[in-house]
Length: 114
Length: 117
Image 1 (cartoon, one colour):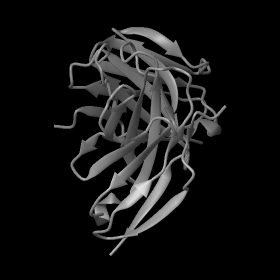
Image 2 (cartoon, chains in turn blue, purple):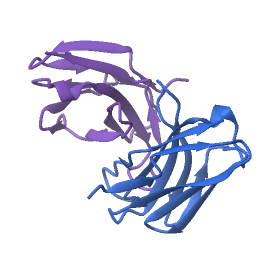
Image 3 (cartoon, chains in turn green, red):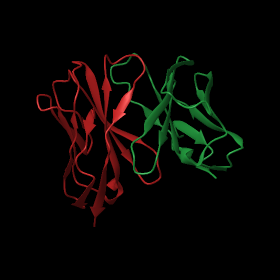
Image 4 (cartoon, chains in turn yellow, green):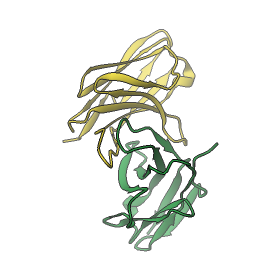
């Protein structure tokens, strides 16, 4: 089984649409992350949830709204996006308070905003 | 200020040969961690190897090893016996601070590796 799953794999939406990206981790981790990655660039951190509470918001516009319903699930609600928001959105999880605590990533959602 | 530098935008290697991908970092924190990730064209980031700042030995994971030179602030990835499936983008990343708490990574710009048959 894939340890971090993301749905959908691809999403095309208009600027007036509302959509959600979903992430689920099967690793029992206590921290989850959203990243945005533009083509040929490294991932950029957007949000961090620690023990289901929002710990970091990297000054992300309010048209992106994260939600962590439980320790395994992470959602990203999208509303009134702009074409420049088109990117690969990656979810990751890690176990805090461990020596190594590497992040495990999902396969990503490729978002296109028309 | 850029904290992670990957100076090689692209690298080529023949199948079965070894290749070194360069990474230098900058931090004043005595406690930090260094990670390498592989990103194939499919998009998923795959964790390869980790080196802690206090680790005495260079990390190894199968065909991957990390050449950690603390004084020079470098953490180069060595891939031995390259395979066609190694063709991908490779990112070096650093976590500052005590290895607890949430894990804020700073990524380098990446190196695209192409393995030729």
